[in-house]
Image 1 (tube, helix red, strand yellow):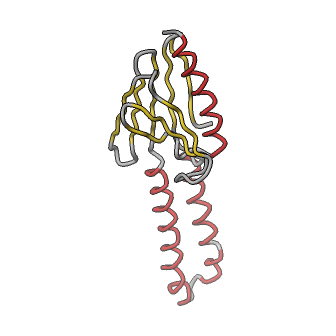
Image 2 (cartoon, rainbow, N blue to C red; image 1 turned 90 degrees about the vertical axis):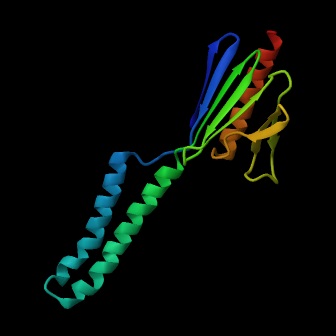
Length: 164
């Protein structure tokens, strides 16, 4: 799962969430290389033909489009959410792909963990409410991952509240 929940001490824990990133840098090179090969190999039969010059711009355009789409996907996947929980404070830090940072702080005794099964922006929409605000958590996770995260966070919040 693309999150890591750790209990730092008996009275505190941290959670780090990130989107799925299935294509590593060497996979990027492989995809671009195989695509170039797949586009270029049939064109070998057209060497010396004026038809090659008619098809070549479209092949280069397709390869360039793939390159930019994969780069954009990587850039959009730079989202990171970090949640720090203790007996006295809950702190959420959300870093957007463009580097913008949003922060939220609340008292753990007054926050609620909400799961909206349907009707939210995503299926099984997970939010934290407290400190006069409601913030989303892990909107980029799959619905099953949000369900599992809710169970783990709920148990952790109960544990932190009971030790005060």
